[in-house]
Length: 181
Image 1 (spheres, rainbow, N blue to C red):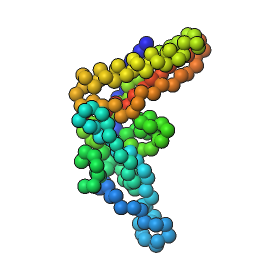
Image 2: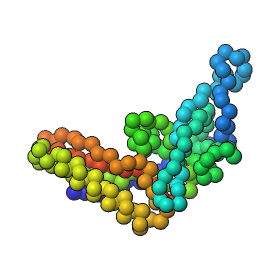
Image 3: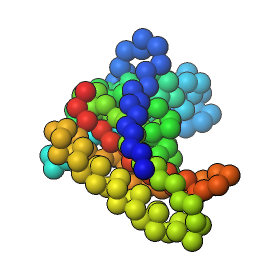
Image 4: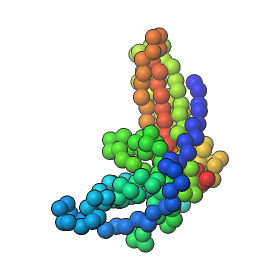
C-alpha cells in the first residue's frame, strides 16, 4: 500500500485580475446588443468551507471571459464566503462530481490537493475486498488530514477505480481535499 498527497495549485491563466461576477442573465441571441459577441455564459461550481470542516457549494453562471480569467469575485447575493475565487485545474474540478463535471472555483484562502491511496491485488476474486480496503484507508487518511490540518475539508467523495496490470489489479482511491493556503 502506498499513500501520496499531490499538491495541485489553483489554476491561474496569466496575470489576470479578478473580475466582478454578475448574476444577470446573458442577453438573448440575436438581440443586436454588442454584448452578444462576448457574453456566452457557462455554469461553474463555487466551493467554500463550512465551520465543521465540510464543504458547501453552489452553481452559478459566469461569462466565458470570467472563466478564462481564472479568478472571479461573486456579487453581494452570493450565498458563500465573500472574496476572490480561483479556478481549479480541470482534473480536480471534474473529480469533485464525475457524474456532472464542470469548471470549479475555490475561495482564494484555500488550496486544493488530491489525496490518493493505491493497493495492488493479485487475485481478481479479491477485487471487492480491495476496493473496500482502499476506501476505508483513504477515508481514514481524510479524517487524519482534517485533524492535523485545521480548516481542511474534503471537496469530493472518496472514489476508486481499478486498473488491470500484467500481473495484478491496481485499485486507485482519490479524494479532493482543501486546506488553508
